[in-house]
Image (cartoon, rainbow over all chains, first blue to last red; front, side, top):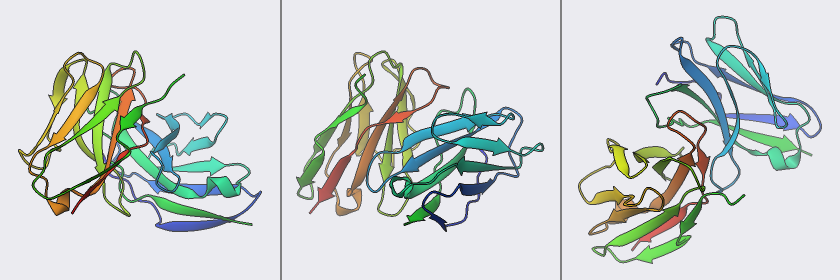
Length: 111
Length: 113
């Protein structure tokens, strides 16, 4: 799996949009971008994933650049409960089954 | 529905003892994964199963670690002759199929004294 680069930490004001960037410049054509988050010591929680089109679900939006070398996870209205470590993972759609988490971005939502 | 469950949630053992950690995946999920997470780090892959077959054990650190899933459902990760460096959070995940989204359990915190 291709590796990803994320800033180690970010702050966001409560109620504002949180935009978390991820670089994956060596991504291959069949590799998906996955986002998970981990709140405190809980198990990683799946957020969203995409291949090349932008995706949106009830938790977040995922914007993938046209060249697929970077992406942004958007939490539209951050709450205090969104404080967590966010992991951007690049994964082959089929075949390579383990997730490589890296160190992620620690997002702190400030009241 | 019920998510992935793991037991025990906490395990304290003395160096040299064997431990068995259990994972109960989401019902119907074919694939099951074990990860280990050190404090301040992301989870690291250990091994994974499709049904009862162990497909990849490349992440197991040494031969003291083994895993099984005899009936294609519940899995057990066994660590023999535990050492202090084995202390970590052990996490299990399952997915419908090998290429599908993985859902994680709450983990087992292992402390080796």
